Length: 205
Image 1 (cartoon, rainbow, N blue to C red):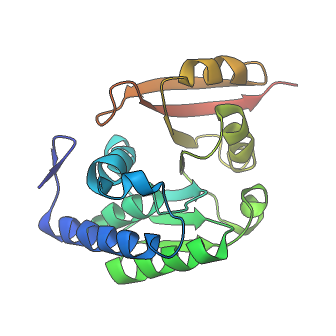
Image 2 (cartoon, one colour):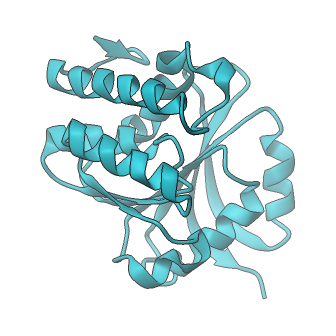
């Protein structure tokens, strides 16, 4: 099997297939994603989410903000299971979604844990992390606010954010309050989308 032109092992494929089944089953009871995307879960969610790990395919500690339906957090945790190293801390304050995430991690053998807290408070409870991810959560300026407490403990931290066609205006707006290094990775799934890689984050006084 291939995702975004890259080979995926049989074991990881089976974990992802099981996760998709859980996602579609639970989506009938709780709002994990827009109903229109359920049938296209592989293209709209799995392949899109896989880009994060494919950009940073090494073991490390991740924090995934607003994990919701598990994208990209659970997908990253599934890839880490193959490495048998690294961990994803999934932050999701909605109890029903947190229950889904716990089930998904347990049944797929993914390397992660769920933290049912508000994102603003997450840094107090989590260890030092190497990487941050978020998808379809907030504009860039707000996301950088979430990253800052983690960046103060690890100035080497890197963040990966999925963004759509209006990302340039978000970047311009964020530069009013922050300085950061930016790499724009063209999405392998959506032609007018990107994955923004951010490092060396500093808040402007």
